[in-house]
Each structure stands twice: as C-alpha cells, then as structure tokens.
Length: 431
Image (tube, rainbow, N blue to C red; front, side, top):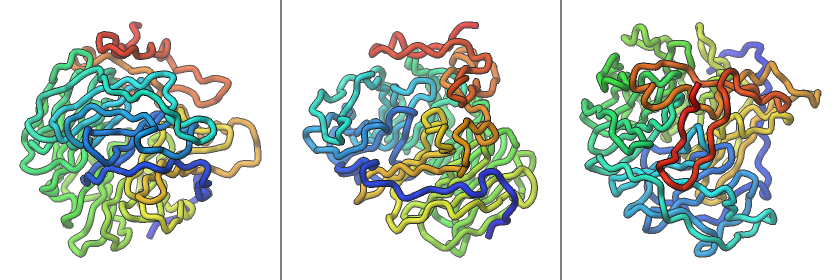
C-alpha cells in the first residue's frame, strides 16, 4: 500500500494507554455529524455530554480520572445540543462552542479549573454558565467552527443554512459570508497563512475560497466518487492538498492534489474497504500523517513528501480493537519533549472514555533531540484581526521546543491571559 524509505520518524510507536491515564465516566452526546467530537489545547480538552442544555466536559490533561454525573463541574449555556467546539490557538483557556440553537459562544476557563483531583477522583465545583460572547447570524444549526491559524480573534463557522461566516470575535461582528454551497459543508480548513480556506461539501466538491472576498478561487468538482464524508487538509506550504473519502466501490482512499492544477489528483492511495470516514491528523512540522477512521481501532502513520510517490509508510502506528468515535491532536507545545513524544492524539470511545495516545520516536539519549523537533507554531498571533482583514499575510509565529530555549522567534511577548470579560479578549502585541 505505502512505499517505505529511510526516515527519522520511521520507527515512531504508540503503546496502549494505561488505565490510570484515561478519562472515564462521562456519557457522551449522541449527536452525530462530521465533527471530531473532541478538541484540545495544551492544557485542556473538551467533549460534549449527553443531555439538554448543551453541556461540555472540560478536562485537564494532567488530571485523568472518573467523571461523576451531577458532581463533576461542567460547562453549559446553549439552548440546544453542542455540535462542535474549538480552542483558541493563542489562548489555552478560551473555548468556542457551536450549537443546534444557531449560535456560537465564547468561554473563558478559569485558571484554577480542576474538575478532577490529583487522586483521580471527581471534585465538587461550580459549573461554568456565563460566557464571554454570543455570535448570532446563522439561520440554522452551526455544525463546524475553526479559529484562524495566524490572526487573533478570527473564527470561521459553517452551518446547515449552507453558508460559511467569518467573525471578529473581539467586536462580535460578522466579517464575511460565503453562500455558494448548495449542500451541507462536511469540513472546513484554513491554509498555512490563513489567506484562504477550503470547504468539503456533501455535493462532493471541494472549494478553495478567498477568505476576505468570500469568492471561490479554485474548485475540485468531484473529489471522491463515494457518498461518504470528505475531509480536506492543506499540506503546509507545499502547495498540495490532501483529501480523504470513498471510491465508487466504497473503498476508502486518500488523494493528493496540486493547487496549481486541480483537474486530476497527483496521487491516489487506496486504504481499505471500511465504512467509517477517514480523519487525517497532519503534523505540519514533521509531515507525518495519522490516518484515523471513525469506527476503527487502528491508527495508521505515514509521512508526506512533496514528490512522487508522496506517501511513505512508517511503523505500524497504533493497533487496538476498541473503535474510535472521535479524535484530535494536542498542540506541540503540550507534549513531553524530553520523552521524545512527537505527537499525542486523544481518542474518544463510547465505552472506555478518552484515551491519550502518545506517539514516540525511540532515542537512547536523554538530551533534547533537535532533528525531530523543528520550530513549531507559538501561542502569539502574527497579526490582529484588523491587520489581517486589511491584507496582512503572514505565516504563524514560531518557537523552539527546547525546554532551555522556548523563546518565540521574533514573536515578542507572550499574549496576556484572558480575563472573563469580552472587552479584554486577546490582542496582538504591538510591534
């Protein structure tokens, strides 16, 4: 299936998670869709819970344990079920949630938030019920939301009203609306600099949209022949795009496209014949792709190279018989660098809670390994929402992962912590 070559990540492995490191006890929301069902910042993760009021459990990575319904504090405030959520890449305590009630809410998680104690037992506390901002504008339920990768306070949302809206969350204003889709949006992703975003639609088309003008620049009319969901992923700064979907014969496949010529894919990789949608988790720093399928137990690992044959198989990835409901990646800044952890995925299961999957490159030395840890995106925005909307185009500010030198490269000071009121939402530091 994949070609094998020499790579520093070839022997990456993931041991089965230990029971004491898992987060259990919660009854997950029964809402289905194209979302990931879990999202993480460097400190917290969020999952939607069963029941009314749009409840979300916000857990800490360093506090695994058992959730107790009616005892463990949660976050809630929507009038309908929560469909998606997203952590602000520049503030580990700010969470955005979208709901069936057609609104998007912004929340601030307290610095002392600790729903589970150090002993793994539930701690009684106060629920989070007061949000920072309400974004109102969609006519139907809001299915997907995505923060801008380089600009502060910019959020994209897609809805069952077949529109994609961009928001300036600092002013609670709508920046633009894209309304040229004739069916449900199944995925929305930003490119490396955030100048464009791509949408995968139920009509099997992938559209590449100028974010400021809300106009389609390019389009793949038939990304995959199958009827299952399509996912999209920009491959860093390579000018290539990855899509996952199903063939006409219901086989799962991955395609690589060149943005300069979208008439046909550069490469098609057949995966298997399973029914679940493939969710690609792409590490832009290392070019490693973690292929996760809904309903699958296994997670495949491969490496992208910007030349044929494009895909290279790595180790066996992660093998399990426990089916996956949802998955997300923890930002690089939250990894155990000195243990050579190059990625951590959070796997949501129906019966065994949330399992942290640590992918590690085996090394004998205890020293920092710079060859497997290139600089990564920092928590400092490259520009403000106003600067970006005015035409500023910048890649992410980067930082070293070396514990001795975690300084940002020209990024200036770290952003201020977020108070609970919207008037002090994160701002880009002045030069």
